[in-house]
Image (cartoon, rainbow, N blue to C red; front, side, top):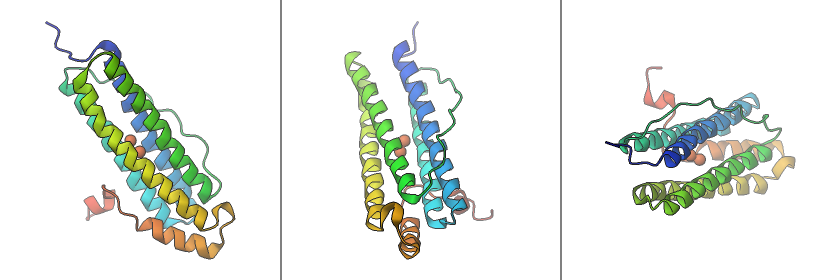
Length: 182
Ligand SMILES: [Fe+2]
Ligand SMILES: [Fe+2]
């Protein structure tokens, strides 16, 4: 008997979202690496933590596909775009990434409605809420960057911004915090 409770189309669409979350994690890793190179240790730490959040989203979607009797297929992750050249560009890329991710999730919601797949519709509400929070955070950070002077920010205000963003709380600890012996 058929044990996959997801349509073939929905299974593929959710699988594509797994890859997109992995891609988001790569984008955050790229941005974190740029920030480290620019000696922005606080911003780099924030971005690497956020990369971890994207991996958690990825894992949750994988679990959902499997719970419904579907099959996860791990695909190649595209290369992120070139590194930013300043802090403003960095946080514009963060907001852009979150908006694109939200749009992809909205398309999944549309599909779940058209298929009357209410279990998936219900699961996706968690992701919709999560994206709302992530867009809010990205927008708040971009506001701070602009307040500090945007791409023409002085060294003094970049110094403060780096410290402030480094202290921004997030749900997921870094590898160092999880493995204090490392
Ligand atoms: Fe995500
Ligand atoms: Fe995100």
